[in-house]
Amino acid sequence: MCGIVGYIGASAVKKTLLDGLKELEYRGYDSAGLAVMQNGRIEAFKAAGKLNNLVNKTASFEPKGFAVGIAHTRWATHGKPTEINAHPHRGERSYVVHNGIIENYQPIKAELIGKGVKFISQTDTEVIAHLYESFLAKLKDPFKAFETTVQSIEGAYAILLIDETAQETIFFAKKGSPLQIGEGESGRYLASSDAPLIGVCESAIYLEDGSWGYVSEREIKIFIGKNIVSPQKKPLPATQGAAQKEGFRFFMEKEIYEQTKAVGETLASRLTANSARLDELSADFFDEAASLRLCACGTSYNAALSASYLFERLAKIEARCEIASEFRYRDPVLRKNEIFIVISQSGETADTLEALKMAKKAGLKTLAICNVDNSSIAREADATILTRAGIEKGVASTKAFATQMTVLWLLAIYIAQRNGADEEAIAKEIGAIRRVPSALAIKPERHERIRRLSKRYLHGHGFFFIGRDIFYPLAMEGALKLKEISYLHAEGYPAGEMKHGPIALADAELFTIALTPKTILKEKMRSNIEELIARDSTLLAIGGDEAAYADDRLDIDERDHPMLEFFETMTIIQLLALEIAVRLGNDVDMPRNLAKSVTVE
Ligand code: M6R
Image 1 (cartoon, rainbow, N blue to C red):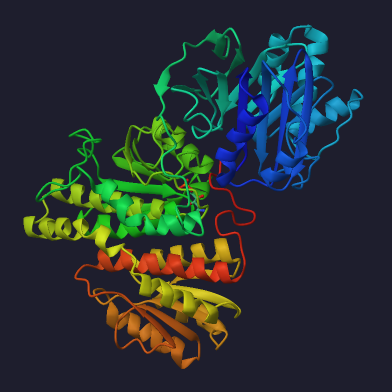
Image 2: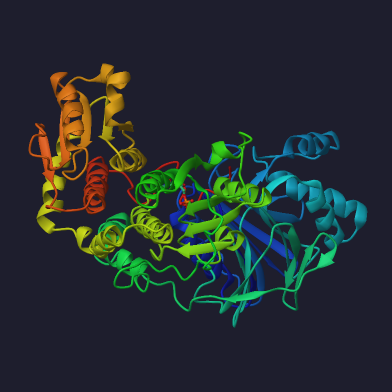
């Protein structure tokens, strides 16, 4: 999704901005741009498509010495992904970059047009620059003009604005979209996530919603409303950590292979000989808990849904799941003795963040399961359990899902212990969860078999991933992975529901990917598969129940726990999606139309 970088200093401004954008590239975008101010003059460049197009466009632009710069990667919301709609947007003398959506841009635009202002883009963002300049003309003071602009706009935003009449200054405003300020030896930085700041800044100031102000060479001034806020600095890691492909073709592939290690990290120090330990939770965290409400989007929602089976089965606590974008607007009934759990890799997903705020406002205790420390969601929740997946660059989530599932399983064991579950049952879970890293290890021959098989699954009129129990959400996750990167239509369905409608689609050109574990509901699953085979659906069975009479089979190892079968099956559906997408020639790490972190609703 859109990314923002700002810089004030004397260290190769163009390179600094482009390097910053590069760090945000994996989040998904369709155009990019930058603007640099030196000696009261701004030069701006924009390009549709990949960042390299902007690099080529700015090849002969070499500003030397002190400069002020803003830069942006855009993921189109209002208007096509063209060069004109790329940011920065300009007025007469000011330039703006913006993440989020200005909800009242239409009346503002109409009013400005009425006053003779000419607009050239289809974006909501352009109104900010023109509105600012109209206030500047009246107030003759950039600071007051920016303050009035911020007061006049509605919606969710992170904004940087530079103005030729306010040299050495970047104005900023933040509401609902992430924005942070970093200070380093070579200058002051602003960014929409930590990534561009790591390695160049030691600490960051994470702006609260409603913050606005300016950063100049001399000072950082932050306001909320009219009040000055003292910045709270938080340390940043010294390096970006592992973010190279390390010999793999794609980040996604590397991240699938990394799951063994990532889950090892997730579990580190969270298991004793016979119990789950979650030091992040106060001893009384679940004291009043009568039920759990899990809320998330996309893959994280699939993790929530799988986990709801574990919470009810192991911990005997009611667990309901919510898609965050639905939850927000359906006036849900919330009970104070319910624990509200949000799950998010990025910690910045707008719908999940807003759902979390709603639950907090309603007085619920909140818990975030999140991969990014200091993210908006991690900061908002009463408690956070970090998944420790490390940076996930592939847009299609893999190791983030594996680590979320591990934390959720741990949490289910943890609550089961508190609820007085049988010691033997807990010991069995602890023994099994320890073996997740080995269940995630990928054998070269398995990968090769999937690669070869993938060539048979490139056409057809659709895919149904089917499963039962925890394998139903996993089927949904398999379908999501496939459609994200292959652009083939795929649905995840409860196997027992097929006969209530979707089976009408069954013929040889319908690909059914059946998840067939041996340890759970295997006879039921077998019957569902027979129904599809009888109607000639082409069927790939992943799991290994011998009776699954399928066209193709990918068997997993003998496992004595459904969750271990779950994790191993998960690696297979991830690799299958990957290999199909590769054969179709798609950009696996940055699939079309998608963004890694969805910061608009
Ligand atoms: O960062 P989050 O976990 O909150 O993101 C939620 C979804 O946008 C995300 O899981 C998305 O569905 C992935 N691209 C799936 O691979």
